[in-house]
Length: 130
Ligand code: C2G
Image 1 (cartoon, rainbow, N blue to C red):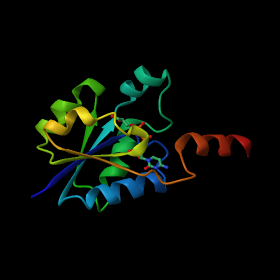
Image 2 (tube, helix red, strand yellow):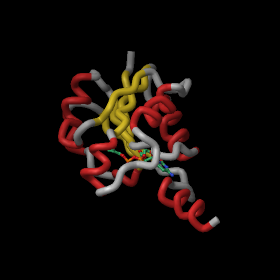
Image 3 (spheres, rainbow, N blue to C red):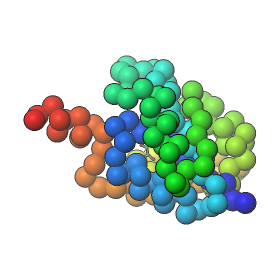
Image 4 (cartoon, protein in one colour):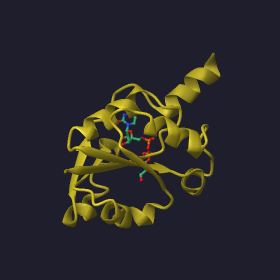
């Protein structure tokens, strides 16, 4: 069985998120998703996501293409998460291009093109303007 892992915040879940998860799932038979915790987001961006981690994880877990969800608590633990979940592939959007190449000694690292014209940040701006 080929196992694929990916990571993300998936705040205000949108079609760009869905597309990357569907495409990541095509690399194997079992898709594992690390959903970043509220605390990790706060430490990176000094703000919390709009949707709390349990809601974000619940939405991702409900998708037909997703087999397992866990919380990504720290960016420094990525190597350990890949090992613990026995991932054969790490798939990320190309906004992370090159950033995870260091893990190519333990899994295949793949970057996929982002879905154009949609992001959580843009959605927040659109809603604010209305
Ligand atoms: N994504 C995409 N197209 C978009 C928006 C996002 O393909 N229009 C992808 C991103 O490239 C990423 C995934 O969706 O692979 C999740 O995106 P975010 O929720 O923004 O996740 P991020 O904050 O980048 O968290 O350890 C890394 C972090 O957990 C990644």
